[in-house]
Amino acid sequence: MRLLPAIILSIAIILAPIIWIFVPKLLSGGDQSFSGTAIDSGARIEIEMLSQQVEDLQIRLDDMAQEMGKVAAAAARAPVPSQTLRQSPAGSGAEVFQQNGENDIIDAYAQVVLIANRRDVNDGLTIAGPSYLTRVFGPPREVMSDSCEEMTNPRLASKLVLEDVGPIRVRMLKPAADSIRRVFEEVRVTDPDLYARINTAGSLCVRQIRGTRGRASTHAFGLAVDLNIDGVLDTLGDGRTQLGLTILADFFKDEGWVWGASWGREDSMHFEVSRQKLDEWINAGSL
Image 1 (cartoon, rainbow, N blue to C red):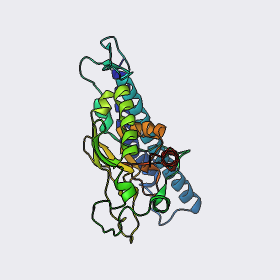
Image 2 (image 1 turned 30 degrees about the vertical axis):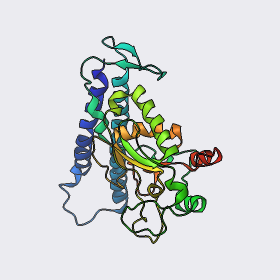
Image 3 (image 1 turned 180 degrees about the vertical axis):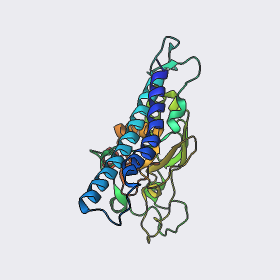
Image 4 (image 1 turned 135 degrees about the vertical axis):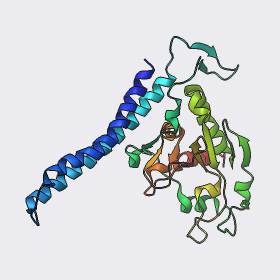
């Protein structure tokens, strides 16, 4: 039964390019014997509509491949008769499955897929943004360049930590490090295979946003991290990402983090603390 999602996913992936290549040829096949110099406007409209339908079909197939990937990943995490339940280390308050044998579809986490409804992935959360962060904390550094430098803001610098937060090490503000540690602990308990493949492209970087003068990104405040699967960096702005990051995004959203996949220029490696979570920490006196 664990192979069924993988088979469905494989069929969907195989069908997509076949339909993409041959359907347009079928649609245009009747025109190959045409010897005239032009076609009427009605025919042009019909051809354009058919082409759009083919493009829509390709998008639907990509979405189906993504959904099948999610099903496959969920099936990999489901208990099967060969699994035995064991307790987590004392005091963790969690139970995990010790799986026997190899995971047949573990590589699905690294698969690159379209980000479904990416504009809505942060529904209910808002970004803090450079203007708000600077107004609340002041700039992270008096003078910023295009290179990463030390943080000089006393309020922020006193809260900086360099810690292991599970599968990665980060340098961030203490509340952010604690928060991301909770996220990864949930991932570890729920999906240990995914947890083992999480990697980072960096967290704190005190510099100005490239192309601006003195405008700091969330990374400069120690409130953001870039993640990936297996150390493979995501392509910026293509609307696609690794399946593992789409799964991680749900855990981060539950903790109050914003995912960069929803931005105009998609940045799906990027996760940052939402304004709601930041205000919560400020009101609690953590920052």
